[in-house]
Length: 202
Image (cartoon, rainbow, N blue to C red; front, side, top):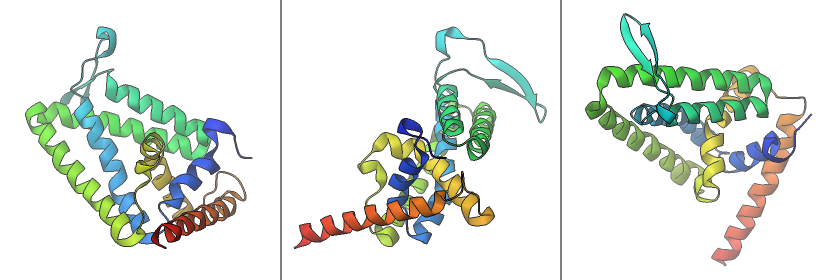
């Protein structure tokens, strides 16, 4: 059964899906969204810890890794909890991926150092964002969702592509009838957008 308000997955998925209806654009986002999240965490690794909290130290592949309880950790926590609240099964998988990204980005950052990490982040972000804007401009022919709702677009993007992949390859639905309900709402939103666009042209 669907949830309401902030945790209304149908509403969130309908909003984001209305901007990502073209299969090629969806594939582009599947390819680039999680690397954007990963490299953002890579950059935030170098921010200071909250309240001088101690770092978590462990060994990975024979190398020392320090996990810092900073902005990167906070973002990982917020995303993870929000995704689990949206849908326990898919959300738990998304939360696990967020945690893996945090640990892996911390490992990579500790190996590269700040001077090289920010260059990797800049290059990856430029490639990924360029790819997504091309996906919207060439294939979707609609501006990205972030231009209408920045917060929702950024938070929902990783979960959207994961849920889209689970649905496409494993026929997963958070609950029976979810896909058909979202598809129906998306068609209405897309039609309204096309009607508005046509009025502006005429």
